[in-house]
Amino acid sequence: MGEVCAIVGCGLIGRAWAIDFARAGWQVRLFDPVEGAVPAALAAIDGLLADLVENGLLDAEAKAATRARLEPASSLEAALAGAAWVQESAPEKLELKRELWCELDRLATAEAVLASSTSAILPSRFTEDLAGRARCLVVHPLNPPYLVPAVELCPAPWTSMDTLLRAETVMRGLGHSVIRLAREIDGFVMNRLQAALVEEAFKLVAAGICTAEEVDIGLRDGLALRWCFAGPFEVGDLNAPGGIRDYVTRYRSVFDSVLASALPRPDWTGPVLDEIEASRRLRLLAAEIAHRQRWRDRRLMALLAHKRQASATIGD
Image (cartoon, rainbow, N blue to C red):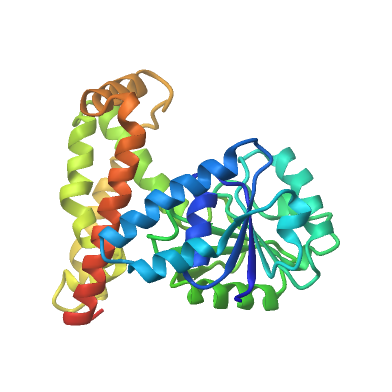
């Protein structure tokens, strides 16, 4: 039997983490105080595992072994008993997290790493008063973590280096690419990058420069095609004969001009949101969002399978 991971909170992120750990050989206990949440998560996981098999990312034997490692826990205490890793994916409410983390710290073994999936709350805000605060940190994935390799580790000021190194070892063991932050910062790394891009997208639509769909085209059929295998610094390094320094020399004035002509910040909740929502609902009815989410995950599976094959035949 492998080490035990306790999944606390079984929504979209929690159930995805459950697949991630179980697939890597961990015994996984799922707990959620909301009645029916754990059975619903396990039912959803059954469908997701079938999709992984269909896309060649698991074989039938691995699927059965992964599913066998997942079990419901009747209480928080039962979930945490003997767990080496606790992954909390509760709602993004600070007071709820503070109360919950007091219980996690009290019930988990002293050796357990306590990790939060939060994408918005700094770890210092809910771990400061805990006796075991040195073993606490944020381990923030992009959804779903069993398909998206990048994961970021954000320590509180008191998170020990041993905890960070253990967390990095565990995440790499699950197949993740790790971003280890030197210190806390709002939004961590990935959401800060995302925020800059989404803000500019809102600006362009609010100013009437282009439509919401045309913004999506620019990413989906443009920049994202390169970014799915090379980040912005590597793209720049490859976009000039002399590499990144040559790129900056050639194109700095272009970016200076763009940044100097920055559009005013729009009110995301104002009329521009009505326009963007209307555009989205023309392309996707609200009732079809859940179905489209599964489509997204299947497309990610196909992309991941392709990237693995391309890495094997072309190289990283």
